[in-house]
Length: 276
Image (cartoon, rainbow, N blue to C red; front, top):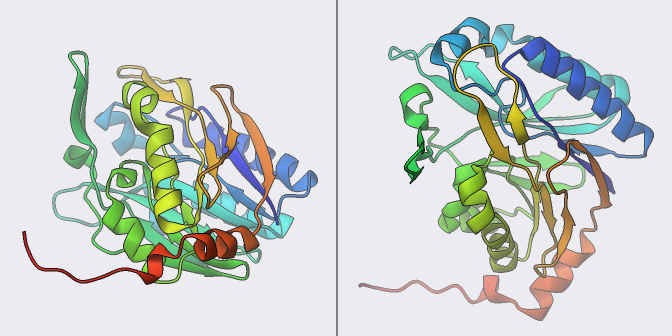
């Protein structure tokens, strides 16, 4: 099945981002893509809490979600919206970082709220406290599609192999990791982590990413690593998108999952153990 990763540079203006992604989806579908994936925080990349509160919306009102669902239906494609920043009704006012699987009729098949929050200091000048503005999810999610079971994750989740093991044990043969990865950690760890999760689970790992310097109306400019990546179940890097925005199409072949798991059937060798 022809599948397309969209590598983009979202701004802090959801309307502009929606128009950009709809156009890229149409182009990808025109090239034969039947499954299209966008990165984390497709609707808004911003370091400004004030700006986020101005432009983010509750799910029932979110115009990016409406627009992308409509576009998926118009094109007749499956769509993974890598994630949207979504307002919640939580008492503390924090947002959700939520991924959506959309079917070719524009219906929401699955929702996943990012479980692991990126609270790190990667350098003297680069500190992230995702949990300040976003509340973590508490449920692993598998989306049932007509091309198989898809395990949903987001960005920092890639560092927690037990999540991916649970998704695989739940039947997932494809693992999605939309991201807005830090350039510092991206350079050091991105490819290694993606390849490890693919090899451990004998699964496709599809990782559409934000890239570059993100236009903003206020706050500090955010930079992301790019290098959207597709890793096959045997661990080969099928696509490394570099740092330019664009569309990257490949053939998603389920038989390679079966073959990788036949050659090294580690998923059948799992054992319970005591200790340490």
